[in-house]
Image (cartoon, rainbow, N blue to C red; front, side, top):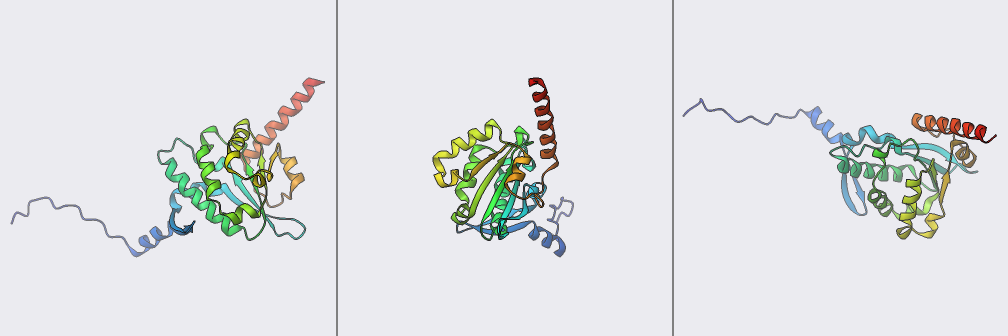
Length: 212
């Protein structure tokens, strides 16, 4: 027997701790009756898109949920579709866990690079996969620092969203206007959004001085 032949590389054995780490990188969830697995490792840098902003209302039972678009992945990623698919599953299941009853959703659109704004098809898919309970319990959807693109996207959504849901959408031009709508004590505002707000304030001051 010729022992001089090169032996094939053996698959390295995985230690027990490594196997446990691998298991922790995946989360099994059930969505629309189907079992899905979320790749937690690939979405780790983007989990900040969703956060809890406390509660509002006289009974303090209405949850405030914050979605910060500036933390979304860049579309230049080779695996962008894969990341967005798993990020959506994470957002959907996390939202279901955070919301027990009524809630309002703050969507920080401003300060989001154009290359990070999700495709319209992704937005449509998100709406269609949100279960009836989450749609019904949503009391307000605040779109902060809306751009022409965002307003156009909302118009494009009209054919497949209900009139009742459309009435829940509120455009918010700036942070002071948002503060007038709900308590902001526990709302985490991204630094990029704060910087945008400051820039808009300076522009507004210059514009007013120019009119005088």
